[in-house]
Every structure is written in C-alpha cells, then in structure tokens.
Amino acid sequence: MTILLQRAKFKKRLMPILFPLMLAGCTNLFGSNFQDVLRNDANASSEFYMNKIEQTREVEDQQTYKLLAARVLVTENKTAQAEALLAELTKLTPEQQLDKSILDALIAAVKRDNDSASTLLKTIPLAQLSQSQTSRYYEVQARIAENKTDIIEAVKARIQMDMALTDVQRKQDNIDKIWALLRSGNKTLINTTQPEGNVALAGWLDLTKAYNDNLSQPSQLAQALQNWKTTYPNHSAAYLFPTELKSLSNFTQTQVNKIALLLPLSGNASILGSTIKSGFDDSRGADKSVQVDVIDTMAMPVTDAIALAKQNGDGMIVGPLLKDNVDVILSNPTAVQGMNVLALNSTPNARAIDKMCYYGLAPEDEAEAAANRMWNDGVRQPIVAVPQSDLGQRTASAFNVRWQQLAASDADVRYYNQPDDAAYNLTADPAQNQAIYIVVTDSEQLMSIKGALDNSGVKAKIYTNSRNNSSNNAVEYRLAMEGVTFSDIPFFKDLDGEQYKKIEAATGGDYSLMRLYAMGADSWLLAHSFNELRQVPGFSLSGLTGKLTAGPNCNVERDLTWYSYQGGNIVPLN
Image (cartoon, rainbow, N blue to C red; front, side, top):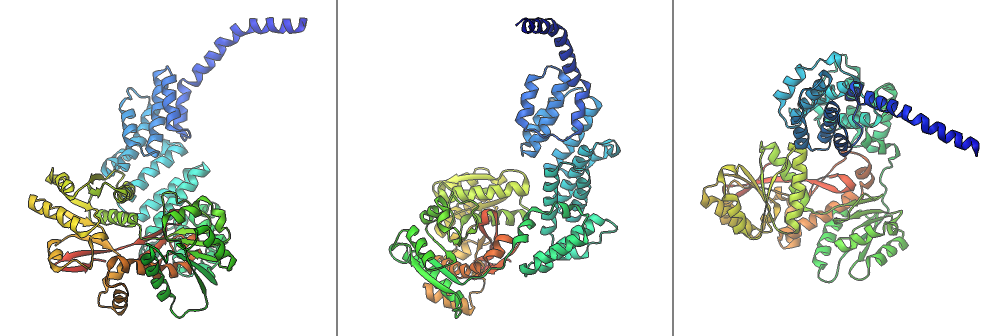
C-alpha cells in the first residue's frame, strides 16, 4: 500500500514536468517538420483532413491540411470543392507552394485545360520532387495525353509514374489504367509503335499484342500471357498483373450439353416468350448436340422451374425473362448454384453473382451509346430530354454516368411529362441547344417535339432512341425527321436480306417483336460463349442485337448501330 502511495505521489509531481515537454513535442510535430507530409502520399479521406483543419490552430498547419484535403477531393471527383479550398490559401511556404503547383496542374488537366496544365508543369522543378510528388507530376502528363487521346504518350507518362510509386494499391491502379489505355488502342497503333529503347513500353506493347492475337481463341490466350511473363519476368506488370487479366488463369472453354430455356409461354406475356423462343430455335438450327428443355415460367413458380432444370441435369439456364423472376434468383442465388445462368433481363437489384450474366434490350445500352456517339461527334454540352418515368430516369442516369466518364462533367438533363413540356423546355433558350438527345416511347412523341423545335427555329442536332423507329412509320414521317440520328440493332441494316424477310414474316413486321426475335437468336450465341464472355476481358460476339460484350456484373452490353433519316430513307451510319 505504501509503495502504491509513493508511486501516485511521484506521478503527481512528474506530470507538471512532462506536460510542457509533451506540448513542446506536439509543437515540433505540427510545426515546420509537418510540411514533410506533403512530400508523401495522402492516404486518409478528405473528411479526415477537413476535420484536422478545424482542430488545428496553427495557420501554416491548417494550410498544409487544406492542401492534403484538396488533393484527395480531386481523386474523389470533387474538383470544385478542391478549388474552393485552394482559393483560401495565402502566404505559402516554398514546400506548400510546390505542392499546390502540382495540384493546380492536375486540376487543370482534369478540367481538360491542357495548355494551363502544361504551362504549370514547366514551372515545377522535377529534380527536387519526392517520389510521391514525382508520381503526381507524371499523372498530370498522363492526363494531358489522355485528353488528347494520345494513348502511347499517356502510357509513357504512366510508366514513369509507375517507377515512382511505392504504394501497392496505387501501383495496381496505375497498371490497370495503362492496360485500359492499351486495350482501347487499335491494333495498327499497337503493332506499329516502336519502343525506342523503352524496355517497359516494349513489355506493355508485347503484352497487348499477345492479348490481341489470341483474343478470338481464349483457350490459347492464357498460355500466351504466361509466355509473356516468362519473357518479361522483371516487368512491373509481371509482378502486378492487370486486374482484368487475372481471371484468365482459371479459364475453361465453354462446354454446353443441356440448356433449360425458362420463358413465359402462356398468359399475357406469351407473345414475348414465344418470339424469343423462335429466335433461339432458329439460331440453334439443326444443331441437336445440345439438349434444350423448354420450361414455361407462367405454368409454375420460377423456383419450381429451376428445380425441374436441375432434376433434368441441365447445366445452363437461359432465362427467366420477367423481372420478378430474375429477382427471385437474386434473392436466393444458391438455388442456381452449380449452373450457368444467362438471365434475359436485369433489375435494380442486379449484382455480381458467380456464373450469372444479364442480357436484354436495356434502354441503358442506348443511352450509353448516345453519350459515346455525341462525344465522338464533337458535342461537348448535350441536352438530354427524357420522360418523367422509369424509362426516363434509367436512361438519364446511364447517359450521365457515361458522360461524366467522357467529359468529367454532368449532362444537362431535362424531364418532361408531355411532348409539349419537352418542346417548351428545349426552346426556352435556343442558343444553348447545340445537340439534344431526346428519349421517346414512340414515334408520335418525337414528331410532336421535333415539330415544335422546327417551328421555333431551333437548329439543334437531334439524337434519339430506337423507340421512334417503327414499321408503321410512313415516308411522311421519315421526311419530317430529316437529319435526326437514332440508334437501333444492326439487324435493321439489311432490309432486303433473306434473314430479314424471314423474320419479318415470322413477326408480322412488328419491329418490337423483331428485336425480341433477334434477342432470342443472340441468346443461343451467348450461351455457347458463356465462360469466354465472363472471363475474357474484351471478348465480343457480333449478334443481331449488336456487338455483345460483358460489362460490370457481367451485364451484357450492346454496341448499337446508328441510323439517320435522309431524304425519306433510313441510312445506316456505321
């Protein structure tokens, strides 16, 4: 007891001595030496650094935290907030000013102001930068090159960035970006680029060539990539392989023996199911090597249909079609465990599930295609007019997400309840209407909106979706739509072809049913390339509904064809 009391008294006498020393240590930590953190990576969230700004009394340290917060805000796509923070900075130390210069250059590049970004980089003494700062310097160079669509220069900059990176996650992210750049380049560019002594670039080019040369033969692709690793054992990508190529190590070629086709073949949705089945059967043709068990999902609960498919020994399910039935699988994925599933629809609940893909004629595909088309046509401030409905919300969201990826900014989305509303909103400021993407549910809506635009003198370029394209549209409609560009499935390019005439006869010429028929035909193709679709990045199939590839969550994306109304005719543009 006596010893405990002595210890307590000693501690009490010691604390007044230690406390000032502790404060002195804190002052040193948050004093001049604290700026050294600017030479390192910012690993915390912007919220963490914003809180530190409030908690810190020293103005100099507050400014350091503002620089760190702004740096992270840019990576979080909050550029405006980052700029607001930087505008608050005054009387910076040389180290702070250096870090701000790098950050200012990055923000300029993010905003696609390449001239300003390049000018700022020239003021930065590269030799004085830390490894972290060097990596950020080359990131700006990469962004400038990416803005100019100069793939090789962007890759070169990111190779320099890779050499400066020490954090494994940042290194992997950078490798994935290099790979994405090279994958986006055409084969001619990859095959004709000379590395000129740049060993790292030579390795990247050879990796891309190995991928391109074997993409159509996925069973050989894995071996080709392994051979590349043997040739370049010290390459950065040999240590940290591009993420989307890692799944190829377990690739097995698709083998289909028995398929369960789950469709609504009775009741109100029977016309949909039977049309898809007709396309599926015609694509199958005389191939009887694969057994197909057709199950009517209107005749029994989808859970019973899945159980029946398992009982029949079916290794793959094509379907179901109705969203409610797809949600049943999503709520209980163990029900289809051990089976490949090509769902013929998607829902808001869709997510990545092993051995499951989603395929359908989704309006999101058209919206993303419209964003790509408008961007490639030089449009930089698109207006998007969509109905106030589920269709409108889905297309607007898909368009805007893609536009943010392309332009780093939001599209101008305007909702309408009636065509008159859309026309009024679009004619309110004609000077702004350079290009408009109008989403409609039928051709009559487009006729009303375009007529109002014409009457108001608006000369905007009009893009629209496939729902305006109907077999019921007479030549008068096509003449009125002169110059309008729209997306649709490539199947409609050859109206005089034998296949078109056959499907036209089978569906009574109804374009909606013809699209479903084409979807059924492509379902057969997708079922026979299921593993390739899931595991081989960039693998594609040319189907009647478009060029088919797997996107996030194995959602099958369609590269659509663009058409234009010209002189009363419909002319394919690609």
